[in-house]
Image (cartoon, rainbow, N blue to C red):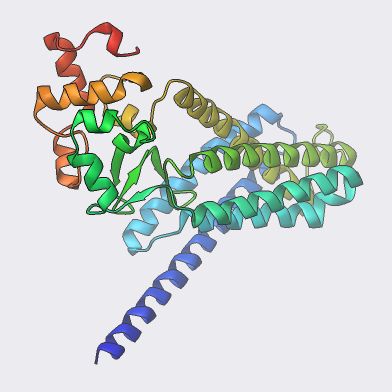
Length: 332
């Protein structure tokens, strides 16, 4: 009987995976088809006009897709969505765009995509810094006194920044955020990989924009002289618009993370805290101890409910208002 239950559970999981993959495939198809209609119906429009229309189309497709999935009770997979879109753009490049590209640029672009795919597969299975409550090392840190912790210079400050991820239902050391696109938490152990992969996406997408622009220039499909393009021309333009939009928002996203790294801020801390401050690393242990003494609550929360009930930023804010913390102990 237990074997039958396990087999039944595995079948249900397999059906769920297949179902989510099919839903994701349909989502990618409708997204790319909707973008394909932009250059088809507006063949002589400027690049700025096409970009604006593409944004409206993507917002409409995303909104309608979410409503349909909610009504049908189905779910898609964000990592699969990213991966299938990469394969789609790569296919358009190999079939349509590649013939107008120089050999050196062709080799460079293909190598970039291979590295992006490898990085995507790696971050999907990477350990962001999972912490199991009850482990000897964590209990020793949580239960030890301030003097004991201060006497251990090898203990990383980020150990004190354990957060609970409601999506993965785990505690993560140095938790920054949960990334749906990569299907994993971003924490202490994979934050560098996340930044490198983000840079890789920007470079590869920018390269595709350059390649498709070169194809468009040689094919004279964006010079405003044609009132109708071929299917291959529309595919090249629509995927170029898609890649360009990805570059624009990802550059802003990368700048945000560089800012966070420079000022020792985690995304989750910024979002959840009413006072957006960065605690100076050398004083973090002392400030943590002082906050615990003031509030009577530990800033590490093994229980998710406690983490939601008591906000670390709230305690900082109250302490500042009450004069228990000085300006020298925080960085604006």
